[in-house]
Amino acid sequence: MEYQQQILIDGEGVFPLLRHVRLRGTNFEIGQQLAEINIANHGDTLEKHRVPDPVYTRARRQYFQAQYPILWQRMQGVAATFGMDAEDDRYDFSWLRYNLDLPLRPGCSNAFYPPHRTEDGHAYLSRNYDFSTGSFSDLVGLQLPPEVRAQMKAMMGEPYIMEWEPTDGGYASWAIHSNDVLGGTFDGMNSEGLAVALMADDEVMGIMFEPHRESVRAVGADELQIQRMLLDTCATVEEAKHLLLTVKQFYQYVPCHYIIADASGKSFVFENSAGRNHSVIVDGNGDPQVCTNHGVHRHTITEAPKLTLETNSQWRFATLQDRISAQEKHTPESIRAINAAVGVRQLSQAMKDNPGFRSIAVSMNSRTLWYTLYDLTERRVEIDFYLNSTLNDDGTYQEDRSPIYTFEVALAAEPV
Image 1 (cartoon, rainbow, N blue to C red):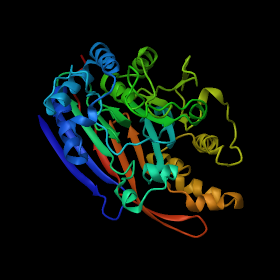
Image 2 (image 1 turned 60 degrees about the vertical axis):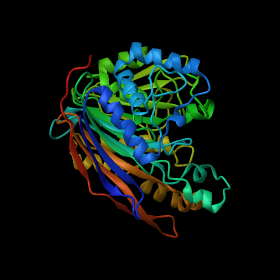
Image 3 (image 1 turned 30 degrees about the vertical axis):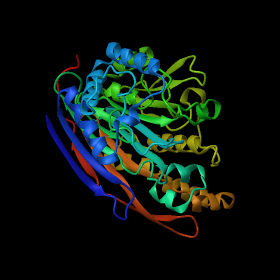
Image 4 (image 1 turned 180 degrees about the horizontal axis):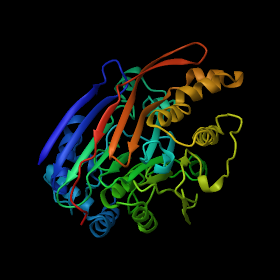
């Protein structure tokens, strides 16, 4: 087993404590090491994995054994770290969570650029991840004693850059994890040039919001685990479509939709109806494709609507589309600039210009926590992180960001 852990941003006086973890070994060893990381960094204990309803745990375990054996091997490693048998259904070893009370409505903006629309002929996925810098109590306005509030960590304050190279099945991958070191994949790319990113589906959340507030009473992969499954097992958009249509999936916290792209220039957005009664593939047809926080299949947006809190997803979507269409060929620099135009800082500026939204702009504590640029052709990733900001009285703010970190995705064995 090869293992490295490095702190890239130490969290002192800035928002994130950012760790970079590199693992190379069997899937059992990867699971074992991840459990050790969660114990050391986040105080995980066996008791936190105890469940009140073993029948659900047994069904989930049996599902993973049959449909996602790579995760099952990692689960056995997690169980071994705690000195347990992975088939002891009193405990759920399919997650390694931390700093997670209940994530609420992240705002994300994503754009895929196929090779024929870029100057260097590469395929790119451009990704803003926008979310609050506060704790769960900050998000929902809980009235707690100061000493209790001081102990609550920011929900997204300890992300991980994960580089995994399994030696006994599954593609090598690079991914951003948060809230679950085992399956908490927010976006990533594998050695085959398949890239994935999730976005909350705010419309579905407004209709159907059924978080598993205690133990999981569902079988299959949740909204984060499904992306880890895609990276582990899929090399192309066509394989990803088949997996998403056949896998059993549930929302543990937030209804999400996904953009998936590959190095050939293909992409699609995958969405579920509010009642989960049908799934929709919105194919990119080899053209640039945009996705924010509303159902793409439910809306045809040709121009930016008047910006309000309720229409900000459509506003970001139309702004991305307009800027992408404004030039035939794009460079990494222009791709970055286009996503920056719909980041939280620019959204706050646009809202501040409307007197009715000025107070909201001033009090907004969401930020573009990270920006990721995936070069699917070269298997290269560039990422930078929000550090801190200085708020002005008029609602604008000055923002400090980390340097741009660059990574290359390693090669690994074919999945089994």
